[in-house]
Length: 419
Ligand SMILES: [Zn+2]
Image (cartoon, rainbow, N blue to C red; front, side):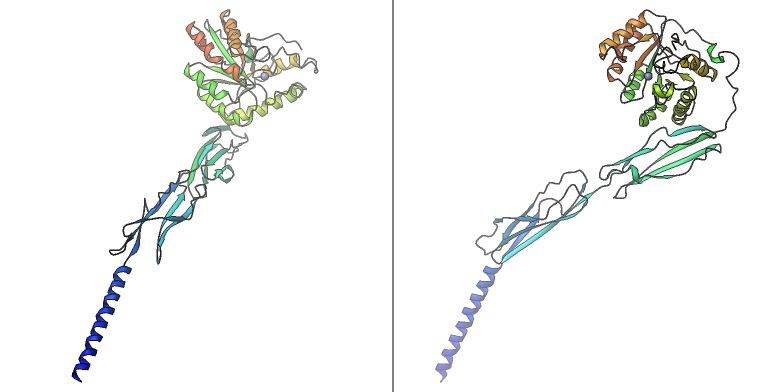
């Protein structure tokens, strides 16, 4: 009896030890997992326009008893970043081996923290005379993400041009990420001072005074602008500290250059708003209506009226023959109204004979060199003509010439009237 139960006990104990061993072995062999780590940051914030480079992630098998412990595993990624679109993107990296799987993720944010650019057209300070209508020259707003935001600009403030005073206008715009930009403009409405009428008996007061300038004086004049080359021309004139006169027409958004012209010491003259011969020379009324349209733009842009004038085609033009005698009447009418009109005594030829920069420079230099005082005709809407200006200034300054802006006492270089 005793012997048998002893035997059973031994067998049972052996079985327990064996099972425990197997179980422990199983546990040890099964003790492994995948360890993952990101290359680079877990959260990445990129400014719109930056490039996202995915540095990926790594995975390795960890387990003391595993045959392949320490082995680098292949990692696959899911999710993509659209750099062209603001937002939050998640990329999930995963790795697996039989009976084990692991994953890790990264968040990439594409943000726009740049504010839009808000630019005013025209001057930041505009001066009007009481009663003169205020027309805002406008603005442009551009955002790196949203594009053109000009239509989103909000304007605050109003100008009452009937009441003299200083008015402040503020402009603001926000992009879709809430970045905002602002700009401000001051409009001064000046009290109207009644000035003595220039009309009356004689040809007009302004025609009487011509102050003869010093020898070797050159008045460069540019007609039909402003245009795409005018800003560059202003840069050149500035470089040589030379002054000039711009006989402008209504060129829309380019009119915002008038403020710069004035600030930099150049003269602005009127060349009619439309430059349309058929229209402006159809009657005196039509001519002055057109001049007044241009005048109000000049005032809005520069704060003052211009009394310098050049007739489209010059006072000697024959394009106005369809209205016989109109030029003879206009030269008196403009003078009576207080304007001083100018023709020229040196032509660059840029209106027809030539399209070459070197020929324009030659024509002008030849014209100037024979004269004590020159009034030079060029057109700043012609790039090839603008390109000749630097050479003309260099030659002129090297030879003792001074480049000045026209004013109400300058020589007029009148042509004879043909109509
Ligand atoms: Zn012209």
